[in-house]
Image 1 (cartoon, rainbow, N blue to C red):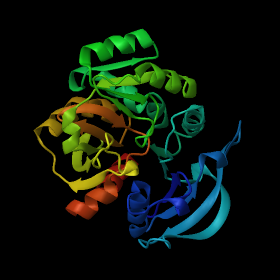
Image 2 (cartoon, rainbow, N blue to C red; image 1 turned 90 degrees about the vertical axis):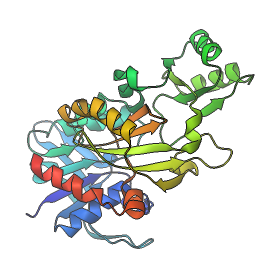
Image 3 (cartoon, helix red, strand yellow; image 1 turned 90 degrees about the horizontal axis):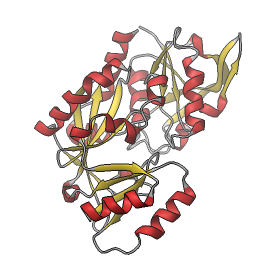
Length: 313
């Protein structure tokens, strides 16, 4: 089957292909003979009564650092001429991101969009995890400093992070006795209008923050991300190390509990973050991990994702 597929993403020429899941999906699509179009959300154009178009490039890809993409043709296309659109741009999850979901929803009756844009919009990655409080560590979402101080007094050792942040940006670990809480909250609330997420610090993060890949509601693979020495964050973007791992009983228990929700909402490709048996986030925008899992474990989950997409067409 020959398909016309599109990647709605940040410029593909600028990605780090050693850790980019969108590139992994493009490689597999090309291996299957699919035609690949890529564009940025800023290049969308909606004309009421006429449709949704995007200006971008038809491309070829190759697994070679520094020479990984070749532009075949620049073109503005009608997105309903495509078979599949992968919504893969990185957060921040702001009104720019949300507007793109509204625009893509206008063509959902003609094109398969993965993940479902409406469900992406309604599942901010840190907030959606709170639908499953029994799986999470003690957590608070607020801008109220008195509530944050009360939470800190109870749990002492805490993590504070922006509610809509990504890639480990803006995450702070406040140990017992740290006197910077008030100043930190003032700074963060000046920079960000949204509430903050506060969680009890989990010492087991020193052993790693596991990224579990979910395809159509089922756990299919994982990579462990171990923080660098002296660093509280395990994200690969900020120096965390990818380490081979396998799914364990906690991963499968959490996956089973949330799998039905993901499947029923069209969230086909997701990544859940698990620390010490606790769910901390459900990533639905542009989850990563495919390249690391293939490199460390030899499992090519891009194949499994495309196999599943085919069942949806």
